[in-house]
Length: 387
Image (cartoon, rainbow, N blue to C red; front, side, top):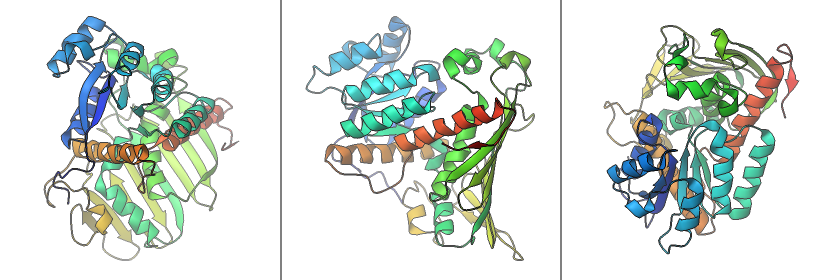
């Protein structure tokens, strides 16, 4: 159980690029980062409109002279200060992630970046190498990974409770974009523009979330090859897809399936991960994140509840309130930001974090997966070797 005790000696001086007024994800970043006093928001370039960004920064109690017109100015000016920023979160449209993250690393800053980290494997590998060279942490906001029952699934699999893994069935298939909502919604419009969103829509926007959860649960399984079929049911979105099915083969003989969609009419979120072994299966559904279903063949279904004594100790360390009280997305993000802070603090002391979190390598893997899915789909749903 976590009671709010400090995880690091001093809060990390932190800034944001993007995440201004009207940005839902910006509010989630701030709520998560500031909740446990691991970060202190001291600067920002919050908006593409400098005056609007400054006005919003004032509402966030950021000093006027530390509300900057753009990230380049912020990095340069903050570097001159003894109390300058140590880390930055990037909450801007996809097409800017690579250049801002690279600039932040070159400026000697830790980074928390929205996914996708970038658009190509080459760019991802460049960021991986740069982060290592600079000894800086790059965290990627696969926010659902902060739910504690993901750790419990990892431990059950690690303990062999499922036996040899055979199938991993994943989906993130909501229905909110079943029509061309982007015509009237700016926050969706850029997501279907290849120049801003990159080579995919739902594969990168939602599909990489359950994929990362599966990687946390099954850290030793690697994709050998995959095939992907993608569609643009709202024709104006072409060439970007609003629905995709991906089949994967793993190096241990298991198979995986990912359904990525925003046209699953009636579905609120539809994000589920089901891992099927030779002895048992487990399933996690993000609309009921405090539960994990554990099913042994021939026995009654077990529903494991967050915060209970029968869970592995490591699955309870980030509980913020007793069992029975529902925790949600804000708690999950707070858990990840706490991990980011501890990893940054360790790096500044010349150490490595001894726990998992969505790091630059996880971000690069998401980019690699999308790239391979697009390559397969654009060649008639052909099988492609994973690289």
